[in-house]
Image (cartoon, rainbow, N blue to C red):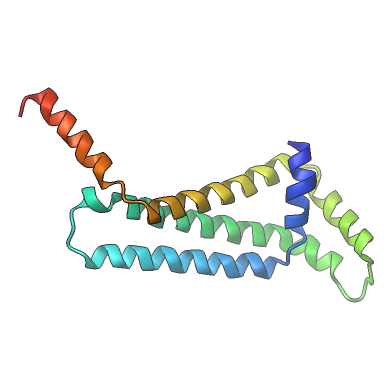
Length: 145
């Protein structure tokens, strides 16, 4: 887990917090557009449940990105303050020391970002209505209807 933190999370923590806020806004916009599209259509829930999951996943993604942006704001402002005139190596050390103590939580946060992004895209791009209809057919056969 420490290797993931060193090689993946630390470079991601150097990205400006405004970038995370920007992508959070995109994710919540996608979630809102998906949800309003679902509400306009008159299709049954069984044919659109994957869109609800995608909308929920993008909402979670937006919240996670906003949370990360809020958490990294403090030490990024300190490291990037023009009055301090830190070189890049000093900025790396500041960000590393600010996040090293709870590196496991940073790995978990970025892992959840990736998972919610992948889940949202998969459920948005793939039609799983065949799965629900198959389950309903199996249940009907077991009941005897």
